[in-house]
Each structure stands twice: as structure tokens, then as C-alpha cells.
Length: 166
Length: 173
Ligand SMILES: [Zn+2]
Image 1 (cartoon, rainbow over the protein chains, first blue to last red):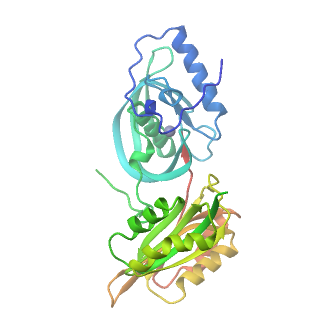
Image 2 (cartoon, protein in one colour):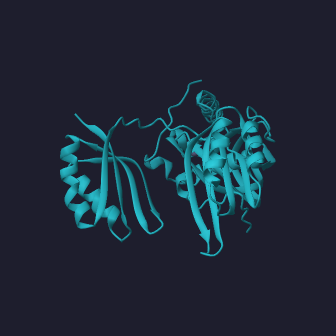
Image 3 (cartoon, chains in turn red, orange):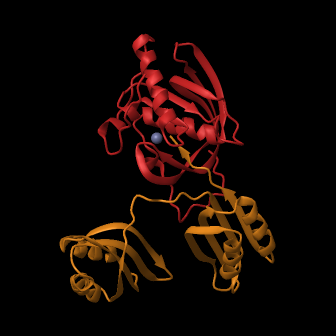
């Protein structure tokens, strides 16, 4: 296993669309293990997406279990993730391993349901809320070439008490 | 050797102030760091970290023509330019209420006492002339914990002043 190096904005590879994983072989397994090692080495990060290490494949790892007082599913290995339901909206603060020394407020759905496969290709189904739902949406954005910078809301007009509904 | 200066600019708001001031700085060989630029009650205000090769006097001479031509006032201070050292807020506080004298002083004094270090404060007067409404947003560091701030707010928010505190947990991924 090896820790991979994180690529940072404005690297073009962060802006591309990632491809679905079709073959779950030893090479993909080894990559996922490296990606997880990279996430664990990061300072306080709860998620990572394959394009952040320069690999354009739909692979995300989220693990919010170290955060106190946040409901979570523990370690989630999300290959080919698809969000199937969104509910509620909330403003929250985000930072990104690929955008060092900057954080900003972003609106995300409060509750989501998603379908994904694990590292062996086995289908999984998850419900996420709050902090964890935010993390999953942030990581899936990476698979579509989007950064939280694309979704920032203005600080000055940020009435964060307000909930916006679809 | 490059020096950092804090440039403060104030004047009656009109289109083009930012473009003119930053162009003069850039064309004179300067560079800008972090900045805050806002319209406050019909005035335009700039607080801008400027990096410049020369002395404070030389930078002043560089900017004077554009400042004068747009009827602005400026002030320059030599500073230390600590970039890439952002402190993350862990609490957000909003205060809403009928505009009353002393509200900012009262609330910020109570919060400071309870360990709040303010990183960013923005306040607006909304409503109408007859019924002004005061709105303040603060982001900061709760150095003695969130509960200390909550108690401080509960004591000083009353009489039509509403204060809300929200812990900020930054999601990094
Ligand atoms: Zn990210």
C-alpha cells in the first residue's frame, strides 16, 4: 500500500467527468486500499474521491465515524454512487483537500438516499443525513468535475437559519 | 524585497473604484493579498493587503493620482503579511432586532468575556427609516467552548433582540 499524492486546484484533472468502474479486479482493489490510506493520512478529512489523486474513476470513500454527535454509517466505500433521493436543504461550511487553506459555505441537501457498489462490486444502499450527507454530496461532485468553489454562497447574505426547500 | 501594506480606501460609492484602484496597484508592480471591499451606507470601503517592492511613501505616490481622481481617501500601514494561515471558525452567531443603541457593544462584550475571538463580523441596518432593523452575523472561535457563549447570549439578548448561535463543523473532503 502507498499513500497517494493529492492534486490541487487548478489541476485540470479535477474538472473532468469520471468513468464508471466496470471491472472489480485486484488492480482496482489495490488502488482503493491506497486511496483509503491517503484519506486516513489527511488532516481531519472525512472523505476522498479518486479524481483527487488523479484517477478519473467513480470511486469515493467517506468515513464520518470519528466525528462526535453526527449520525453516520461508518466507513462507506462508494463505487459508482448514485444519489436517488434528496430532502431538505442546509447551509454548512466545507473545505477540500484539493483547495488548501480555504473554507466556505455551501448549500446541500440535508438527507439523501444513495445506491453504490462496495469495493467488490456488491450493491449497497445507504441513507445519510447532516454532516455525512454533506460529505457524500461533496465527494460525488468531485466525480462530476465540480468543486465546492462552484457552489459557494455569499457570506454577507448568508441567512444560515433559513432553510430552503425545493 | 517585497513588503506588505494594508491599504484602506474610503469614498462616496460610484462604479469603477475597485477596477481603478487595483489597476493602478497592478500596473505599478504591486500585488494584492486578501481584501474586503464593501458598500457601507452609500460609501465604498476597501481594506486590502498590498504587496509592493518600494517604501510606503512610494506606494502612496503610486496610488495618489487614482485616489484623487475618484475623490477617495486612503491610508497605508506597513504590516506583516501572514497568508495561508486561516483560522477556521467553529461558531456562527446571528443577532436580529429593532435597531437600538449599544446593541453591538453589549453583545460583543458579553461574547468576548465568554471567550469569543471574532474572525468576521458583518452588520446591516435593514427595515425602514421609521422602523430600522439591525442584523449582525459573526463567525468566530469559541475559545472557552460553545456553552459559555450560549449562556452569555441568553443573558444579553432580550427586548425584541433575537440571537442565534450555531456551531460550525467544517466538512473537509
Ligand atoms: Zn473535496
